[in-house]
Amino acid sequence: MIRREDNEILVCDIPARELAEEYGTPLYVYDIESIRENVRIIQDAISYNPLSLHFACMANNNISILKELRCLGVRIYVCTPGELRIAQIAGFKPSEIVITGCNFSGSETKDIVASGATLIANSIQQLVAFAKHKGVKKLGLRLALSMTVPSGTINPSVGVDSRVGLLEKEIEHAMAVAEKKRLSINGIHSYLGTNILQYTYFVEAMDRLLYFAEQLKDIEYIDIGGGFGVQSRPDEEMFNWQKFGSAINDRMARLCGFLNRNIELKLEPGRSIIGNAGILLSRVTEVTRRNGRTYVGTDTSMSNFARPYVYGQKHEVLLAEDFKERPVEEIVFIGGNTVASGDFLAKNISLPRIEKGDLIAIMCTGAYGFSMSSHFCCRLRPAEVMVKGNDVRLVRERETTESLVREQLFGNVERVRPSKVFVGVSLKTPGPL
Ligand SMILES: Cc1ncc(COP(=O)(O)O)c(C=O)c1O
Image (cartoon, rainbow, N blue to C red; front, top):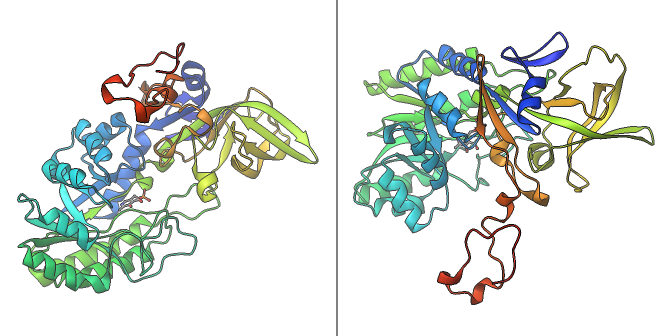
């Protein structure tokens, strides 16, 4: 587990300091034991069977992590052909993959159908596009349920303004189209939004899904999506898996009784499986005390960890070593190493007095950390390590500046015939074609 003990942060029993020294910073660190525990919490809470957990790999697509999840019996949810490919490489069988995404091109649709994954259409147009392929005999439907979610929810996918998913009033039409195309609707899916901490919203969603499921004669599964909240700071509440589980168990039992057969329950957790199993380690590069404020400059940024900038998400930041020796606390602003004025990793937080060279840990960054990273300002993506007991494995190398130019074409591309396009341009001689 990731914990603060004595005078440092430990990942399992390995000091974060040792990891930073060995692999450098910025560094994403993932703890397999925490992942295992998170999976166990969900499985223990939901006794209903058959239950399938499909890890939402948009949260973290490191193949080594996905392989670990597969070994734990977790399946996978993908939303793009790229994620589908990653899932295949990680060894997931077609029957273990659920896909629902949007705006697929014709060739993407063809590849997705050919993969044999479980398909969930998120619009009538997509249903029609899938139906054109002979192999498609059944489909699930993704709904934007008519309900509200807590204000401030990131990526809400409910209500009539949702960009994604069928509206409840479109279901009848979708079913008529499916019938005409000789497709059976075998599943029903919803996704409310991310990081919802109150379980009652999911129970309300479940009630709505059951209402529709009871009317679908070919129903085989209910997929309640992901979005289960994770406590990312001590002052936040925890998602109540126990209460959620018992409400869901009851409802599934009732549905099965009503239909007189077993219906699979699917969940697509991302953050709740890996969020608190990851940290981002970073070194302090500068400390500026000015006008009553302390700005802590770091070797990471919004390019490595975008959520505070993009969503205003607050993550706990801790000094990763020697915190006991520094009793003086001060309020600091932790800044990234891009010049974007809003590139803060944390604002207004209290830390022991920080000095240049200190190691800090941005907590709860296992989900939507690396997977949302970018090359903004030509900052390089961090390395990733996985800790499994005493075993530490580098699972993604730190990028080099080659990564920034690998796909770029030098010169006026429009005038260059494909055969003349330069590949593998050396960094030393990036001259025009
Ligand atoms: C359809 C769907 N399922 C699952 C997830 C994963 O959500 P979370 O990581 O919040 O559990 C998402 C995230 O956007 C999603 O869109």
